[in-house]
Image 1: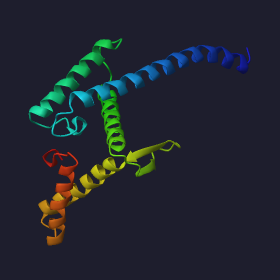
Image 2 (image 1 turned 120 degrees about the vertical axis):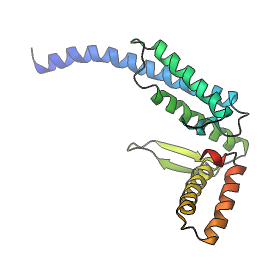
Image 3 (image 1 turned 90 degrees about the horizontal axis):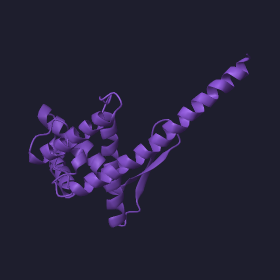
Length: 181
């Protein structure tokens, strides 16, 4: 048997598995997007976006999100062939990312936002558009955290402390609970 015959035989076996994996990934992607949309609608009355609530957050709203996360993890484990999904945090992180993207699109289209920032992700050539609202949240959050660190370390200047108050106000105007940061 030549190497080409071996490769051809293996390729036909692999091709079938590849097609099944690609089909399953497509279904998974669509299902995770729909789940993210449903969570956005379900948690739209929270004081903050549900996907910004971290695993160690406390309070009634955080507990609602944590309960949903536990239910999702249980469903993942129940549906997995071995009975234990290897790392349920990975698909949940994707759902959170999709929810953030959906919310950013909703803000962008609802506000008529055409100003956007296109940035490359990873090493591929994929391009993703970030809404102005999402850019504000990302950048103001970074500034706020840096200001709070400087304040805690006692190295913040008077003008910087005044700016920090306005940054916190800006985050509040965007619906971000600074107590969660």
